[in-house]
Image (cartoon, rainbow, N blue to C red):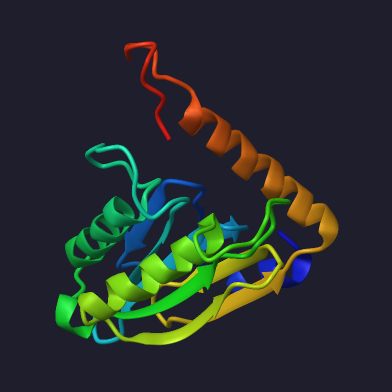
Length: 191
């Protein structure tokens, strides 16, 4: 973390999450993540001053209970974690980040970044959770700091070096998703 960001979060614990991470707390906490084509949704109940963040890689995937790598599960886990921390679901508001086209693959309407963005926005609309701000799409990776009690967000677009690190992590995650699980039939490839 840069020195300036450290000064801004001084006195508050910082919780970093990565792909598949979900965190919510009633204590004043700063949740941090770095995103490429992934999405992070931040939810907050301004009345309870409670909030949290998830970080997912794909809208949906293998049927895995409690597996937050996929948006469907990550959103449900985040909503439940916020409520467990004291949030009232009726007061939740959202901020959405990520979905940057950072992998060197052809752009299309069905690519991972656009699919992730579309999923997050549609999910929140369906669940009637208002989006109070968003920063999605484009070609930059992002570093996000979310203050669970105030909803304040710090966003930094990463340099090409930072993008290379995010790209490497996302490629590794995609590679792992496409490898057959040890106990799976050789004819099945998980993605």
